[in-house]
Length: 217
Image: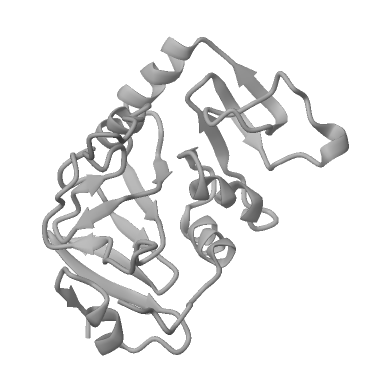
């Protein structure tokens, strides 16, 4: 399937998520595209970022001349720390997650089903390397799960599907899906389109989405 509409840049998608997360929230960011969210927090809004390798109070990506080689996130990328940040054991980090103390997490996805199931750790192929990390703990313990992903795979296949065919990370766990084409909310196991990128019409969006989409109007 050839996609003729590019839609939003993923930095703009990350900015939309940063705008939607309430002030004062504790947030965990997944590895990869979700990390962009930390760079787009609106001025005056306080978001406390948690990384599962033991930091609460992660800041944006540092400038090259200010990188601390010992200060990294779970994806082994250099990060900064805001004033008041604290460090702790890996086990304590997961206790925060499993104990329901994190308000939001932002994760990538291979597939999201129309009921909010998430598959983001393995394609299930024989030669693929499993990388579940803390994703299963996050979707089970965090109050709100946001997904950020491209709408289609590199091969042009829909990522938003009727039923996930890849190994699941969690069932009925996703609250919102943010792609380069649209913002979609999962309500009562149905997908409702909240916003579409410029030039994207509902019929086109449905044509590149395997799952059934709905509008609130």
